[in-house]
Amino acid sequence: MTDMLSLQGLNARYGAAQVLDNVSFAVRKGAVTALLGRNGAGKSTTFKAIVGLVARKGSVRFLGREIGAEPTYRIARSGLGYVPEDRRIFTELTVEENLEVGRRAPRGDAPRWTPEKIYALFPNLAEMRRRRGGAMSGGEQQMLTIGRTLMGNPLLLMLDEPSEGIAPRIVDEMAKAILELKGEGLSILVSEQNLRFAKAIADEAVILERGVVRFAGTLRDLEAQPSVRDAYLAV
Image: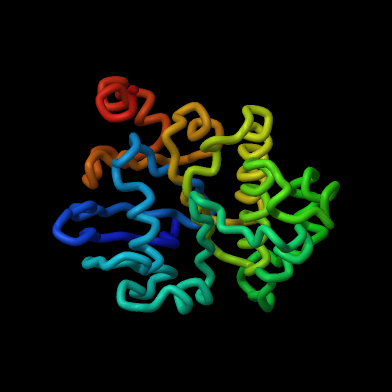
């Protein structure tokens, strides 16, 4: 299966502190890959390095093209959608208006998203189209951020900790939505601490610990290696 995204020897630092150390893994076309690790493992930094929000060295290839030196806006335009952990919705705008902010022209090779399609994916949003973003719960804001990113018609979607800090009921809805997105043909990279959530959605897993890849393989492979799971994921 074709790789949508490939990292080779990716390094990133904040000042003198090295955060990522030769990180290498790939996200296959049409697959859901979970980037797992405890707090501080380097998951969010990996996402930021991919889209050029932190200084990085090494190779980042998207759709077979090297993007490691490109600015963030150009990476986004190429079809890589990024949903950050802190959501960053426009709190004074309504749900409808937030979605319109994300609208981009259709891509011939990507699923085409409209507000109605977003509402079908996230029925909660359909019931609050005119509600301001600041009056929504954390889980609803997370859905809105994903919806706004989908309005850009991405080929690959990166979700940073989508289950963090939201109600269990919404976590289950989020898992269902991610599987529906996979069914639409999207390739998805999800960073997670919640192994149960990752097992519900992912085909493959990568484990980070202190900025180093400690495991890369299928969820089945990970389940067959409880010592690895316990060493790097147990609380």
